[in-house]
Length: 519
Image 1 (spheres, rainbow, N blue to C red):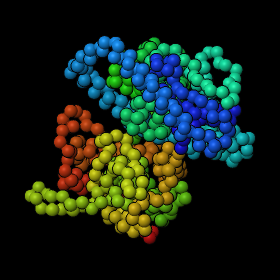
Image 2 (image 1 turned 120 degrees about the horizontal axis):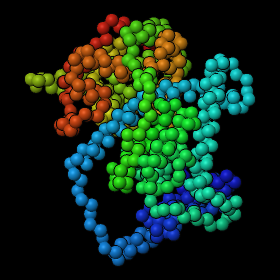
Image 3 (image 1 turned 60 degrees about the vertical axis):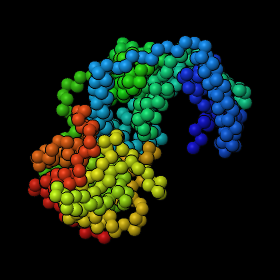
Image 4 (image 1 turned 135 degrees about the vertical axis):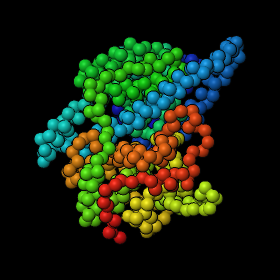
């Protein structure tokens, strides 16, 4: 990947490097260094990037020297006063609210993502004018998604043109000439570039999360006015909300976009870049709050899943990716883990651990190490947050059904537990698997309630953990949830003995599951 290489619409490649906000006043107010490479061949253009990079870094170094000299000539302002305990508590409350909102957004969009991926072939056929045997209902859904996608693409293009050229764009730029970006009005930071990049870097946001937040930033600017983040007002956010609703966006989709916008503005506020989070508290009230809520599975629904042909006949549908079809629902039910957390497990993450009991006698048991570490082969895992890294005891039912034997029987001892899963463009291993599981659950298992999705296993685990009277703190640690109060941040959490004893208490009474009969 060549991060400074960009291709113009006319096919000519350009070198582009962003200029940090604090250096722009010393580089004529420009946002980036941009040079035409005069080439349409990508490989030839890439060969010029190293020299261009050195030249650009030299310009940035000179700007740093000019900035430092200017700072020495101007008295340094006193440091800001320390934050009060009330301010710290308020920031903590904002952070916790954003964490809860992020979890809700992930739940709510899971089914929508699967639906969009399932209908992508139908959308391609509609766009190309090719006949398709899709049902009338799927044709209608696909057509609606196609219209929404085209609307988003058009809005993003308009926002991009306005951002780069302003209201009066130049007609053309001659090939092979040295090009500098037009000065940007104002000297602050912008949501769709500066704030987005710094937020994503600090929080370790994956590519898909960054893309969704960039899209919302562009939507916001296209519907209000492009201005630095410190000039965005509460009236701008309210106008954005009203325009989304006027365009036909549902209250749920509008709230998703407002949540993402609020996340970026909250980060800017927490880092003293703006005086307040002007999006705080702005949302659309949904008339029936329980309508889109993810629900746990009933016992009958669980029995329908685990009596389906995958479990009763040993079937392995192509979309189920081999043994992943059998084990992923079971692991979710008996660990409460997220789909990607269990789908990305490596063989080395299934571990036999020793630990002392309350009398100091040594015990041993199997655990799943849910971690973000990259192994020696370069296989990396990704987690939602810091609390997601944990050891989860393997439930006795999973051992009875043969999970340990399955893992030990894998030929590649350094590979993935589910080697047939293939990552999508965002590196998510379970994306395509999730696309398959939804329709399988609807058509084969007969679970048609759209509030029941794979993430419902996580809600189901929570329900049965409560019935087992499992301590709330242990539930949160097993499921990778953040703590609810300051005290949760002290100590290293519950020990392996406590976790193991709690997991043994977990039961799903009445559920019958047949062990896998496949080799």
